[in-house]
Image (cartoon, rainbow, N blue to C red; front, side, top):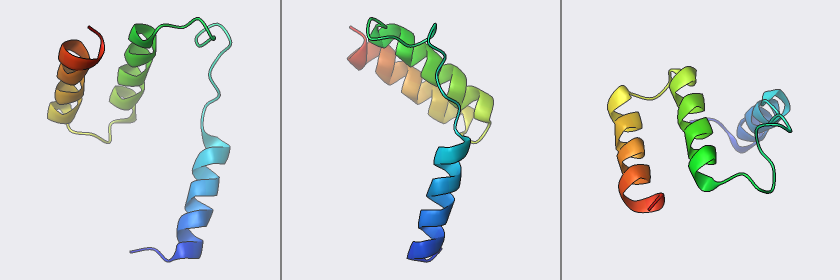
Length: 67
């Protein structure tokens, strides 16, 4: 388990390296449905979650969040 300072450093690196949303993609008028599509695309591309986990997230979006 990383120490507190190591965790802070790792978080700073992640924040520094994260992709900034394109102005055309996310605006104050962007709907939750579109944000959820972008999020699913992002977590799928990262290849760090099991496909079953992404399927569960999509099911939760479809059944509970988006309606």
